[in-house]
Image (cartoon, rainbow over the protein chains, first blue to last red):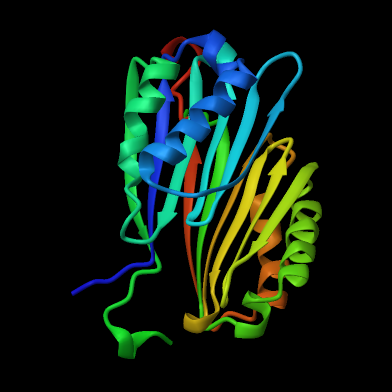
Length: 123
Length: 123
């Protein structure tokens, strides 16, 4: 049986609302709401607005991180939701993200991090 | 020809020095040095030490982010080096990371984010 330490969802979000992608306060709220939806614990959130457009936001969690980087001019956002601990469910952030960014298309890569076969195979 | 917006290296680091994985000041320096090695611009770095062990660090960049989450008890670290811009080369951080964490084994997944066929195919 495979065991793992982290759940890492990689989201490619296309056709998003350009205004949302450039709305730094809205992005910060989306991150905080996403943390809560996942059942994670927020340590801090940091956002940064670029000129003339684009934003970066990272929520540092007790269970890893959630990040977003946006290109409003392309309607694109790259998000990562990386959580550890069985009680946290990263996919529960997706409705929050869809509601705010309104992507027309989402691709999701579902990675497991720190995969182990069993306690004896740790290296 | 495929175009992309971001270069995202996913590093699975096993057999690391447990002391380094729990050394929050050393991790912060490793992150800052990694940013410089990549040719990226640091906006801020945030680290957090867990009890009884383990650490998280995120460097927020003008060109996305570098993150680390550690499990000293397992000798494991999960790192992500996500950069955008042609002038930034995320792989140049790897020697800095190897020097500090001394992993016995590294797996690397090399993702491109925001892949596009051409300017007419955005979405």
